[in-house]
Image (cartoon, rainbow, N blue to C red; front, side, top):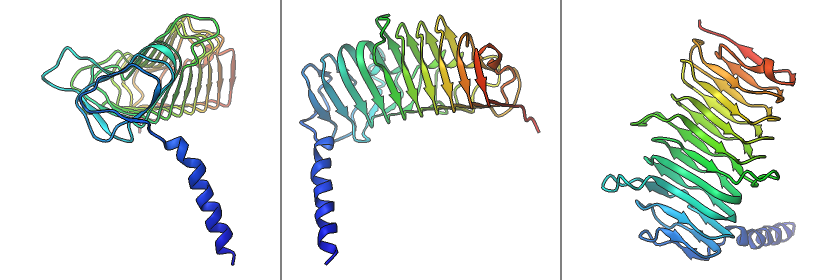
Length: 269
């Protein structure tokens, strides 16, 4: 008899979960622009970029891949948010783009659970310099550079966008100037991010320029060998709590105004 209540509960759970997975419009492979609010999704892999020019848009790629076309070298951006507000892009897989995901003058943009096989900057944000911030959230994105043909100065760059929130993102195999670059991005919150197998030379894991009061908690940085790489650069007035930096010669923790229980370990054995 107990099976009936359990079955009813499961059915109700599926019913209430359905709207979260709803898709109003399946984006055709040849359509490149989204110009109206709505919930969009992909039903197949594609070789065309996606430009979002409207507010109140959800794009769920459902694990489908956007691959850069060799016959269109002038098309650089895989997913481009070009002005508006309240947009969510999730579950996309991007391969070979010079600029994989671009957020340009957008408010309340969220990039969630995307995978980037990068060939240049993976996520590039240009904000509006509003003191209250743009509501930017980057969560659970995975960025890999092992198959990159070209170099990149940074994997994630956030410019002129205060109060960004970066949570549980992964960058692996990056060989450029800084894995995360914050430029005029005050009050940033970085929590649970993993920056692994980074440049063993003089690059940095997180670089902050005119970006005070950052809060860095439970982030992990790891290199194969301790040579001359830096952890944090410009961490003035930052809060640094329980971060783990392995084989980073200059951790940068000494600049943090609040620092507790951080681990800084060199292991070249």
